[in-house]
Length: 387
Ligand SMILES: NC(=O)c1ccc[n+]([C@@H]2O[C@H](COP(=O)([O-])OP(=O)(O)OC[C@H]3O[C@@H](n4cnc5c(N)ncnc54)[C@H](O)[C@@H]3O)[C@@H](O)[C@H]2O)c1
Ligand SMILES: [Fe+2]
Image 1: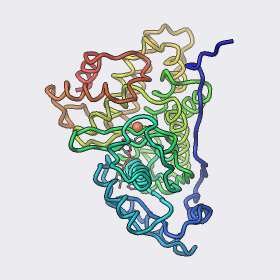
Image 2 (image 1 turned 180 degrees about the horizontal axis):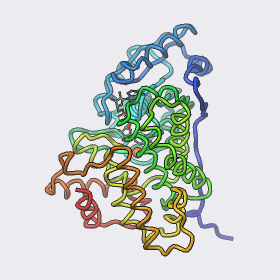
Image 3 (image 1 turned 180 degrees about the vertical axis):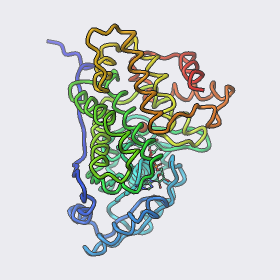
Image 4 (image 1 turned 90 degrees about the vertical axis):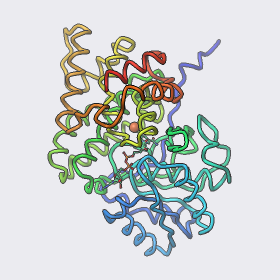
């Protein structure tokens, strides 16, 4: 009997502790890994919000030393990874903890890779390029969006090529993810919106991905449902702990889905934009989303019907063109209500950038699982529509 291996699906996930206060178990988990000296990765904004000092105190109280590295910018750069890895080695650290959004978490993943391979992070671009196990890694997300804390991705920006490259491997799934909605309470409304829409895009792209399947579908649909109902109220009331928890849960569900089903053209195109113009990742995704949905709809009509239903659209008796229209309208309405209405031109993208952006988007691994095959011209047209 022959087996079609293209229909097999696998699922990887870290050990997850979800809930308010879960960050406070960081010292226990570090001790379980035998930590004597933790390398703590974060960034200036998260440190200013007070979250870094708290982790240092928790570690110190448990008799664990720490070296803090906050030299990480949004869209973490190759040099920031390399500098962090040097400091990790020279400080003789043995466990890595990161507290922050996707940028510090991805930088921490990169630091672990470089620390154990002794080579440039640039050499690990692509799928399954990692041969040596990284140091134990504990991640504490402070945005409800990227879910780099559960994912098989690390996204690093190479300013020389003006390109964000992906490292995809189960070796970058952390050992432990402490998902604590309380740390997202210091995000302002705009960051909450950008990162929340990133999570929505993860869920939609994972659900229509050619790598989707029964292990990821339920996570993706639940994430869409939670974001559709809770993101607008949260942006209006950023201090509400219940809504914070719902969106954090949604982000985690979307993360489990996209980490295993991979993504699509929105992410391929937004990585290209983010590397070229150093723009916020969630915003790039938001500005592209409905244009990519319009392009993809015909290749995954039944799947988009389920997406529409998860967004509380009653599709019973509705013809496909009507479902497409209602879904697009709902996406645009949600974006408008959370304040993400800009067009690419307002972010500094010009027509002459589009050939370059499209070329890089086609090199991104996320394009491979997009439900509709995309040529250079197809990608150019979608950028033009979002301009
Ligand atoms: N590895 C993955 O699976 C994956 C998935 C999606 C995106 N990403 C990457 O993640 C990066 C984007 O991450 P992000 O959107 O989480 O933002 P970010 O980490 O770039 O942070 C953006 C800003 O928000 C601030 N911030 C973060 N948390 C805060 C909090 N709780 N309170 C106050 N300020 C806070 C930071 O200081 C920073 O200034 C991009 O590089 C993107 O490519 C990675
Ligand atoms: Fe993303």
